[in-house]
Length: 234
Image (cartoon, rainbow, N blue to C red; front, side, top):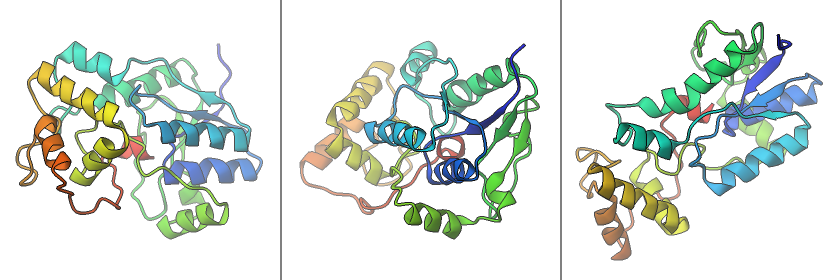
């Protein structure tokens, strides 16, 4: 039977990044638990490995299938109505890993200004909330990261996420055109769109959205960052 130990739910977001760096600074022994989707942006992966090198802790990646695998499996794109992506790609692989490592403790990056979610992944581990133990709120997290000169990526969710803002789709088209084109092709093949037709006055289909961007139309908030999935940004 595997020995129990402490794992940290590590997405690369600001909360989990501040948590793992501070825990390492305090001399705690743990492994970082990161569940890849296969659709991460390059800067997230660079950031993850830079933090792992900095804190000198092991990185554990539970076995799972990619976002594109599950899109083919369901012949559907994830959406607000069918949010299977977080469950199938993030939560279920973590549950399987924790089940195979009974008695483990999972540290989760919920801050003191957030509501505790007891058993976020179910009764498969003991839970700790170090940021809440330290009384850290959002300003504390941001101040700590600034003091340590750590820049966190603007996005830690999938490149092709239904929950993105319009400005994030614009940045994806501008900075990662090949990833944007994957979304165009998926929409064509599946016959549905990542974006809801009710969200705004812009086209829902990425093909048509690309046309608007190419014409020079720029959405508001291009300099802002937002992620929709709480598990993806912990």
